[in-house]
Image 1 (tube, rainbow, N blue to C red):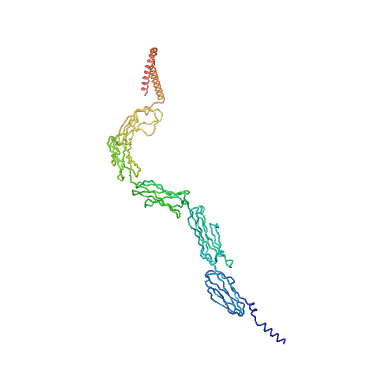
Image 2: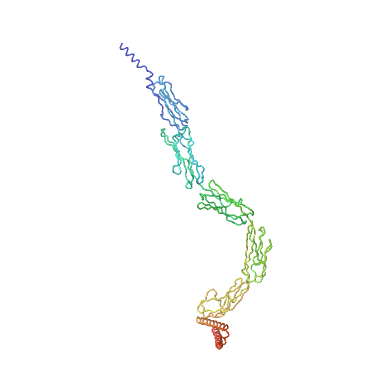
Length: 547
């Protein structure tokens, strides 16, 4: 009986009860954490501890393929994983089903980071928009975007609170433009940190963008004469003030359709261009100046009037006439001058009629040599009177002359001093002068030390193409003491002359009464005067004898 009871309990122990089986079997999935790059595949293994499992598999909306299996496991390939999902792995054991879940996280590194500056050229004190975007990145909650100016961090943004389904990230800020920001580098750095998902750190940066700052508030100004003469070179300039950066300003200058070649300069906040124009057509034209800096352009125009006014024509019948020749001088307007100018010939007795030439008839004289004639033409151009003058010089030819004023016939030298023969001939062409002394040509270019041997007669001859003239020059060399005696003698003579004149004036203006009382005294004075005159005569004779 006891044996029977023991057998029954043993059989009951071997029968599996549902509650006991549920407690002892488990379901697991591998990997326990799935991180898949966008569009890639994932291998998933689903297993159980149930010794004899029933129906089993995985539940997911992803494309799945069973690639292998075992008594207690199954392996699946998930293809083209493009979004986050939760996969269910289930097994049945003794009529009981158990499952476990696997979270699949899809990631996409920030491979493309785009930075945009709007506008690329910004006016001083205006706002510039700095925008950074990553077109495709996941998961956004693990992304950080950082805007940099040079190495300085301007702004940092994460995306923890955004819709995780989005794969586009963007950050935008405004920067106020200052001059010191010109040519600053801007960049954007993207970081995707997947360490919380068992992955690594992905980072990428945008291309560097350079911000340009400018100041361009003034219009250019043209400096040019309102009247241009055809064919004549004229300097023009175009100037721009309060501009930054001045060194990068571009100038384009045109006269009508003719492009000029300006030379550009700059200093501080000023830039200017200089050019040379040469108008080839008469009439009203336009000078334009186009200035550009970055995206900015400004154009200024200035009207000019081109006229034709060549210098008047001055004609002298003979530029090198001989003295006594009659010559005609004519002043006329140039054929290309329109309308006919008003003419004036210097020295002409009358003004010509409008459109008629001015003329003068004269007989050439020696004193006309070197005389300048001027022909003046005046023309009115749009209310402004312009004047041009042509000048010519007359050269009158005449024979040589040796005049006493320039070539004295008697010359006195002081012994022992440096002396030169004083003789300058006149004539045109300029004559050559040759002087001979005792049959030898005397050096006229270098001073000579005067000696008694230089006393004598010198024969000088002046010659040009029209003839020659000769003159004898007497040179007397005196000693130094003789020169002094002569000087003293001259002084005495001058003093006596002054004394005589003074006494004569005094006696002439005395009252008559006093004159009668002092008659004997006047007689004495008269005697003295006669003696003085005699002394002067004697001195002159002595001086002549010494010479």
